[in-house]
Image (cartoon, rainbow, N blue to C red; front, side, top):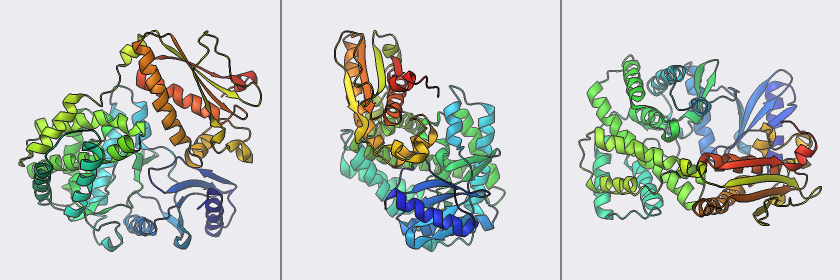
Amino acid sequence: MVPVKIEHILADLFEKWAGESAYLVLPLAPSGSQRVYYRLQGPTKTAIGAYNPNRKENQAFISFSRHFKARQLPVPEIYAEDLDQDVYLQEDLGSTTLYSYLLQKGEYFPDYLVQIYRKAVEQLARLQIEGGKDLDYSVCYPRDAFDRQSMVWDFNTFKYYFLRLAYVPFDEQALEADFQRLADFLLQADCNHFMFRDFQTRNIMIKSGEPYFIDYQGGRRGALQYDLASLLYQAKAGMPEDIRQELLEHYIKTAGQFIHIDREQFIQYYHGYVLIRSIQTFGTYGFRGLFERKEYFLESIPFALRNVRWILENAHLPVEMPELTRAMYHLIESKRFEPFDKIKGASSLLTVTINSFSYKSGGIPEDPHGNGGGFVFDCRCINNPGRYEPYKKLTGRDEPVINFLKHHSHMGDYLNSVFHLVNDAVEDYIERSFTHLSVNFGCTGGQHRSVYAADALARHLKDKYGVRVELRHIEQERKNWQN
């Protein structure tokens, strides 16, 4: 369904629920699925509108939400729904996720962040155990339990989209035997509680200092340990092992208030579920990163490999998995996915000049360094937010424009291709001690698409290579622009 039609349907649903018209229908940053989210705001009420063409997912999310809300669990209230048109309205929990706290933490893991995690694992135990009671598991999609079939799906994705595409040699029969033994072990755990399935920091909203949970439409019956493993071993969280241990103990203590927990047995299964969750995430990284070539997912692989190495060397699982262990150590020791040495980039002679410009006003900038070359990327093929009244006075640095470009254009795929091209040049220039590379992004007015693209590449090169970057927004600076 086209975005304009989705917005009209959501606006109509909002007016029926709120009794007032929405003066703001703002697209939010996209999720990793077909779901589309908007913030709708009227004079006195606000809501998050969702569009998802997968009716079964919608039914699961709405059913779970109403069940959890009735038990006073921290989830959004469902305000209204029109499943024939694949939309619903839910409570607006704000814009702050636990992931946004991680982005601000720097090199250390501060105490205030540990306290938020403590609250999150407390509420997780309540959701899984108390929320799982009398839950209608018949609405689960695609399966009502995290059973052997679910594990097989994850394992096959890992095998064919990660190991194969990463050129890891393995004996398929031996690997299959290892996995069946792992599944046999994991299914001996208590698997009769609600399993969130994707319990990670992007799905935990923080409102007034308290955690709230979203995006549990893939939930099903399963083991308590899986969701805890998902949270504490999230690849890029950078959580120190002593804090992981503290939060594990806090979760066990909290869960023990609701059911009997055998601590030693729980921890043994927990380490096994860390491994199966890692297998699932590697499959995702392989599909998104190695197959679809989306660099963001490749960046998480080194962190996930370190987590797996710790489990293999410290958990002492009672399961023989020689082929799986060998394959994982092959990946770890190959260092194929280790990040570029940023010290090498920062100490190189290279400076990358990145410009945004207007084809209409000034045209392609001249190269002042005498090389007469560099990249010029034409952003005019991207859907232009400047054609819509709400964005005319904004730029590519304003959140509404950023969300528009992420959600209503193919800017993500476009930049992914740009990054691959520029990466090769930067790495080559560093090796050859070149001093300069220019990259130019143009659009009609030099205000929205080119500004966003130039900013995105500047961040990418600094984060990945540590090289010097000179960033200019030519058309906006000509207007004495401040943003």
